[in-house]
Image 1 (cartoon, rainbow, N blue to C red):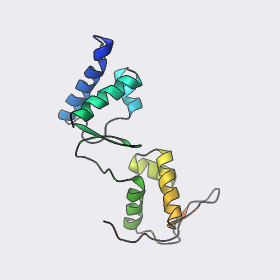
Image 2 (image 1 turned 180 degrees about the vertical axis):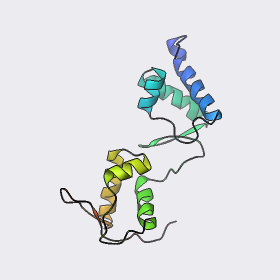
Image 3 (image 1 turned 135 degrees about the vertical axis):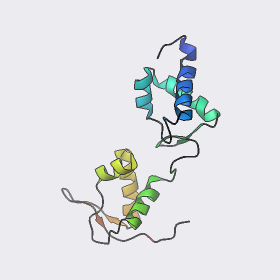
Image 4 (image 1 turned 45 degrees about the vertical axis):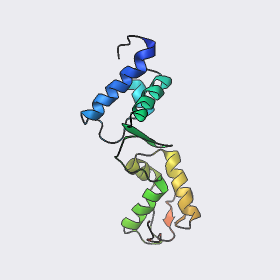
Length: 148
């Protein structure tokens, strides 16, 4: 991205993202900060300032530990809720093998750390049995269907 001045670079990045959102090129989830740095050839602080401008305008929303989204789009529930809903809807029964970490990372476009945290919470709730080395996790119980 051409840089007229270092101070205005973040405004150029914000403007580029704003146009992509308005054109529908970014419809829900924004690229990761690392991808934005690479795409625009700028540093982390420039991306942070550009995203802050778009947040102040109400154009995007941040989900802590997840991503930035175009305002009013996407599922902002915690990952553990999404994975629990997947368990409810999947037809899996107690004793069946649960999804792998890789499958959950791909399905929810989440980091391995976030997936492991969600799995740990589900294990703590008694829904999943911990995996032995070389084996898949097993469904221990199904969640109650008390979604609020």
